[in-house]
Length: 263
Image (cartoon, rainbow, N blue to C red):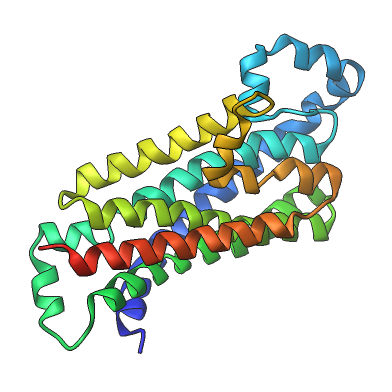
């Protein structure tokens, strides 16, 4: 069991470590520059936020810059985790099935005694490697870097935001997986996944607080809020459950579609 997942997972390990290094460097840079601005933020935080266009405040949900937690929530977790990593996982997942179909490897794979549903499921499961690796290595670097600049972070808060980001990233990957089984061409599937994922982020951000806010319920971003975890110290376990359910639905839909399609 899980031979396909293990095979693909091993090939993703090197890239996952590189991804973790890149995100760790981004985190170190954000933490390193914070002390240079922290004094100014404490005095004029409200005026500083008012200097941002209202649209930017709404899209990125900026609440405060006067604490390292607020600074990280905006600079690292909303931009780096919610947007960049979400897009990256959608892009990565979009190539899982489409690339094998495009290159003719899927015919060889399906000639073995494996079902189409199993192929889709195990290829999706291999994405756990980058998701887990980046959420294990990066928080260690974040906590150490914060201690070095004498701005310690609560271990529970840092651990919680990375644990809660795992179902969010899987949900984003689920969007890419659907694109991967619907479209034969890898490049088209990846662009489609990026467009849908970013479109959902903008949809949720721009409709929040309006009469059409309910439409944003389809966006994974609604259920992962770095500000709530780092600033408010609250954990949305219900939202995490919704993300898990969303991932299961996207995976099941992908398996059903791939079982019925002609390759």
